Length: 317
Figure 1 (tube, one colour):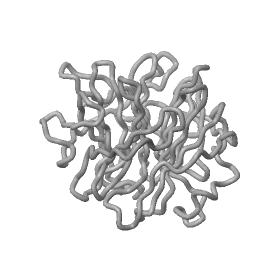
Figure 2 (figure 1 turned 135 degrees about the horizontal axis):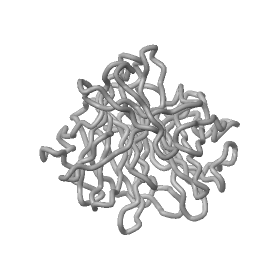
Figure 3 (figure 1 turned 180 degrees about the vertical axis):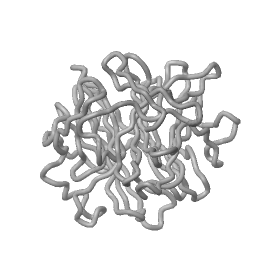
Figure 4 (figure 1 turned 90 degrees about the vertical axis):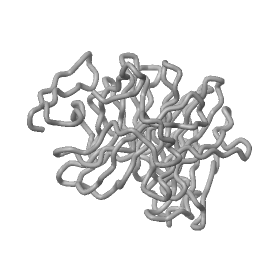
């Protein structure tokens, strides 16, 4: 991108020096298999390797040793997912994974649906290694129907300060919801449900909740429209709360259940529709992963560092 210079910092994804006229920094340098990355999720394993699942046939997997160079690592479900066929119309294309390591194994939540439908489901699987073809189906977590007021897609796990597991999910309709999960099975526990964010039927999706070291829970969401190539208008918004179940408010004090949200990243120049974000608390920094579209409409992996201002609000750099 014009006006940018880049340098690799500490072996990790580099930041870009941005021209003064730009509203946000461009993505840091990434190399290797970084195209056709959509809805990225991220985990750093105990060996120090990064494992990045994303939307794709059977859930696409990529790995990296330095958070900069990425290598294709197959599919979580190379043999297909017949249990998801009623939601995908028989397609193997699965959406928006979430990954977590606990109890000596990896957990993977993912969405099954078709574009524009609310007949959707979130499933969970486990694996001893996280590698392609090692994932075992463990069951249905939550589903929605065409007449549901929200949509069971875009799962995002958060573990609260008491160790309780919660799953945020949803889009459009009544917005973002949250349910409690079993911390052993990864399946739903009880009937509790919370509303976290809504735009009154407007475009909002892709929740991520990050429990930061400053004691706040930050709810990141994507506003506006994904999946339109270079015409995509996705942008990353955030609110925060001292309680995992909310209420979440933006910097101006607006409730996210009433359309609030503070923008921290949006399209500019050759970066179109950045969103469906994930946050990794890495050794050097909190790190924002997301996809964006280039001028040709190809989805690409974006990575930037996150910092917090004197009032505790995150910003991309």
